[in-house]
Image 1 (cartoon, one colour):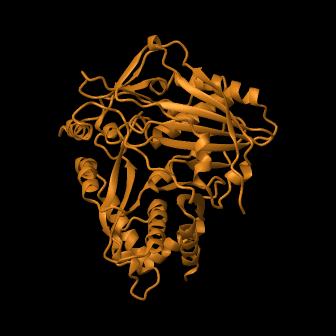
Image 2 (image 1 turned 180 degrees about the horizontal axis):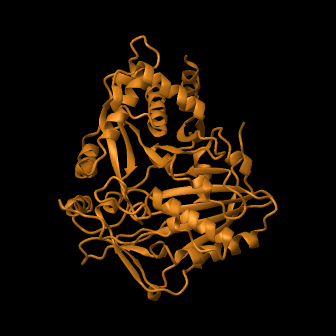
Image 3 (image 1 turned 180 degrees about the vertical axis):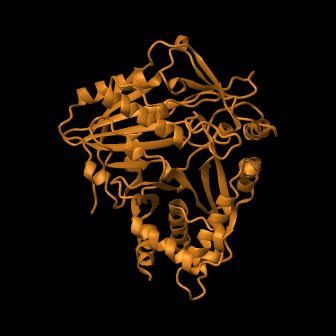
Length: 454
C-alpha cells in the first residue's frame, strides 16, 4: 500500500536555557575523541496521548528541560576546538548565551503507522529530528524537536553529538528530563545525577594524542570539528522492526548449548544471541562469494570494566568498539548440511570478541578503525549496532505514559542495527533495520523461517 508522505510544519524554534549557573568546561577524553567526526545520533520517541493539547505539551517539556539542564549543563553548551587549542572541549557559558534550541513542529502524519513494525520509508522520519549545526571550530551538543500530532500524541526527537555523550549518558538525561516533567517538585534520584569528573579517566599510553593526530591528518593537519559526510538515503530504503521474544531467545540459546563445541568460554547473553542471529540473517540475505569479507562490530560500555571502574553515572563517552573488520562470510554462508551452523559460528565469534573486552585492548580497538577503513574494498558489507537492550529508553515517562515506539533514525546512514528492549516489558528485543525493499523480503523470510527450526 502506498502512503502519501505526511507534512511536518515548523512552528517555532525556542531557546531553552538552564537556571542561572556558572560556566563549565569539560575537556574531551580519548573515549570521546574516538567518535569526534562520526555522525550525531538521532533518537525519536513516540507518545500516544490523544487528549493532549500542544500548549500544555510544549510548556511542560520546555520547563522541565530547563530544570534538567542544571544537572546536565554541557548539553546546553558547545563543542569547541580553537586553532590554538591542543584538543576540543565542551564549553557551557552563560555569557555566551548558550542554550538548547528546541524546534516545535506539527505533523499530519499517522502515529499508528509510523510506530508500526512494517516497512516505512526511511526518509519519512528525517523531518522529525532536528539538525545539529557543526563548523570547523564549534558544534552544538544537543538539539531537540517536539512534533505535535493533533488528536494523536507527539514525538520527541533528540540529535546528540557522539563525541559528547554515549547511549548510557543519553538514557540518563532522557530519564532525568522525564522525571522532572512528571514529578515536578521531586528531586532527581541519585542514579540520574551525572558525574562530571574527568580526572577519573587515565591515559597512561598517550592514546588521546594518537587519536588527535589521526583526526588532524584527516583534516589537512588543521583542527576541525566538521563531520564526515553522510550518504544520501535513497527512496528505496525502508525502516522495519523485527522482534525476538524471550522464548525465541531461549530456544536459540539452547540450540547453541547443544550444537557448539566451544565450551564454557561461550557468552550466551541476550545481546550475543540476538546480534548473532541478526548477523546470520544479514550475511545470508546478501549471499555472494563465500570468500568475501564482512565488517562486523559493536561497542561496549567500559565504565565497570576499567580498573578502577568509573562511576555508573559518568557523563560522556565510555564505550569501546570490538569485532572484526575482516570477518569471513564463509563460516556463516556454508552450513555443511547442519541447519543453524552459521548462527553457531556467529555466536562463537561474538563470544570471542566479548571475552576480549578488557582495558589492555582499548588502544588497539580505538586505533584499528583508522587503518581498517583505508584498506576496505568498496561495497563491503558493514554490520554494526546502535543502542542497547540495557538502556531502558522505554522507561522515559514524561507524565503521559511510556513511549509506544523508540527509533534510532541514524541507522539509515550506516545501515547499522538498532537494538532495544521490547517496549511492552516482556523481556524480548526490538531490532531495527533500514534495508532496500527487496532485501526486506529476503531478510524477513530468513528471520522468521529460522526461528521454526527444531
